[in-house]
Length: 230
Image (cartoon, rainbow, N blue to C red; front, side, top):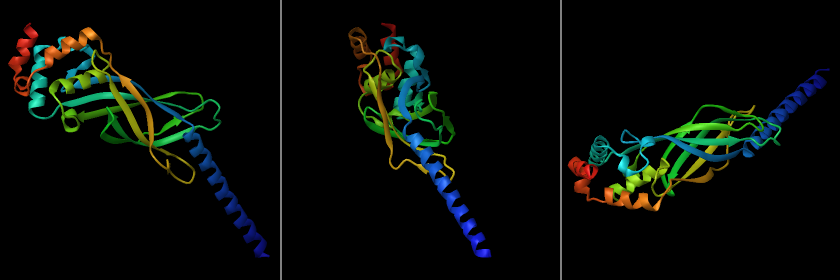
């Protein structure tokens, strides 16, 4: 008499496992359909200088120049900004995707730089775009060589100013929440490249002459002062 009962219990467990597996596959499939792309860049600061008010090198003040010179002299030129990641679950997808973690690596000018993790859960209902702000901070000198001009133009391009465009890519590994636990993507995805910056012929020429100085002069705040006073 107990055998049928055991059989029923066993079948119930199997059915529950299958249902959980099915729900997990639906969640995973839903997240795989989510479209990621890079949005705009905001809140750029280079060694504490607000890049939002600097559209070209001629906008730098004496104080800005001294601050940047001191940062380069100390081999610590921090660039901070917020990169907005757009995520959209297509309206044709009937399941809400729930991303609970996003491991990422930032690439600038096709060079791998910093990495991080977003642990905040994000629900992605069908047809409702979401913006995921990602705060970035890196020492440009640690990852890029070249002159002070090159580093400054890289930051300016990232801020969308009058400089050579900067190419941004994001390598990401999303994790989806499922009834049987978190499931990672099988391999990282590369979010579509995004190029920012606005180079104009007039602005480029002025920028080069303004910042094209030797490392010794760049470290000397008086050199910046002489350039600004012209």
